[in-house]
Image (cartoon, rainbow, N blue to C red; front, side, top):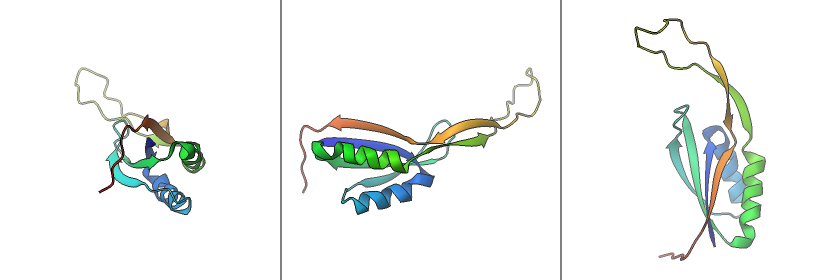
Length: 109
């Protein structure tokens, strides 16, 4: 048995949830917040048999695509620095960060 933690962008979460349902994959969905862009993410917790791990990873890979997005860096309030307005910069968002971990015991009560 394996535990899969998949952190995906909110834009991909509903589609991924529907793919899990279609594939008869049980997942717990948690709302989380990213640290870099401070935008909403969704973390899926999936307990799955070892033989189905690649199936789950393939679904995540196909559903959660990286994309480019513009963000404006925060304005510095340091008076000693140049006071120019920051320009938006392009960053890559989306995709998925996935952890696969072994499970020593599984109990369902």
